[in-house]
Amino acid sequence: MPTLTRRQLLAVGAALAAAQLGGPRRALAFGDDEQFDLPLIEYDGPWSGRPNAVRRVLQEVEMTTSVLVVDTSASLPLTLDGLLRSPIAVLWGDRGFAPLTDDARTALATWLGAGGLLFIDGADTRPDGDFDASVRRELAAILPDAPLTEIGRDHVLWRTFYIVERNPGRLRLDAPLYGATRDDRLAVIYSTNDVLGAWSRDNLGAWDFEVVGGDERQRDLTLRFGVNLAMYALCLDYKEDQVHVNYLLRRRRWTVDPQ
Image: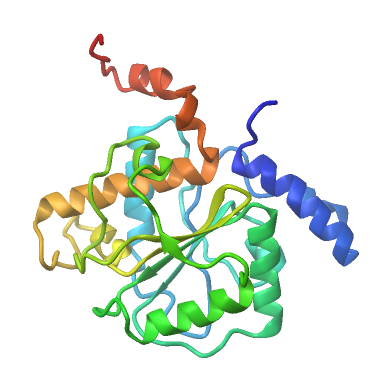
């Protein structure tokens, strides 16, 4: 049986969700099949605190893979119609936030159940700070049967395109990268190391934030993680059978050393 991409999984899941909710059939038209985005979720908090980050990592994705990206990233409202525009969405914050509404929680639960991937990025400077408490409160309500656990080093996320040896981010807090799993796929990936802060670059090319507790190698590693995140969001665990690797290597004119 062929492996579904996350877009295909979401299309099927969205159709089932629409049927259950009595919604319109247009839910089948999920996202843009041609261009990838990494949209930020709008919520009652400082969700837009890294406005230059997504543009920078999308440039990295397009330069290093076969994936076409959007010209301008768009944020997503916390509604089912909003979330269904993309197979992945980003929740960023640096402080605690008020509980989400029941409608917002239901929208997130439905989208995640349909195949969506939520990347949560905390920049609280403390791995167990107020943002972390808010995130764990919401995930307990949205995914009560899928607790956060550390993502092991054997997970395909660490090697979907690059091999990433350590936890990414600007802050280097050495906290684990966490995940919540549904149906043998990561539905949530959660970092407390300010990944977007390491991606963020201004219009003149200068980095917006210094790397804390590390060096520029940590920034490069975090950009590579962004490429891995994009590939996992689009293709789930394709890396396990190496389907796309030779094509991507040829595109970059890289060679594979004979074994």
